[in-house]
Image (cartoon, rainbow, N blue to C red):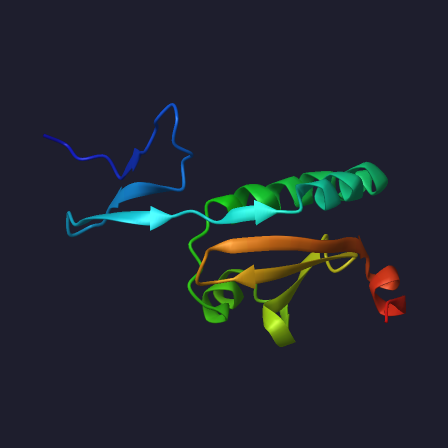
Length: 126
């Protein structure tokens, strides 16, 4: 019997919070997926900055499948990201033309999108 790499958890009345994953040692474990809050902020940014839409959507798709336990794991994937107090992370989008500010709760696997704008707009913020 061939084991799949991922076994999706699907039920009708229970929200999907994660997926069962089979690692290379054939150990089955449950991986909690990141919950993203603030999609409306991202939607408004996509409408306002159409040239960044593809990159913002790609960022969202990748984050939804992420399993970050700490800032080092975020930094390993997004080397140009900046880390501020209170688990605030600034992602550079589109070659640093845009900035995406989020707050990450690593324990609960929640990413809250706080702000998206141009680098110039970010520099003018208080």
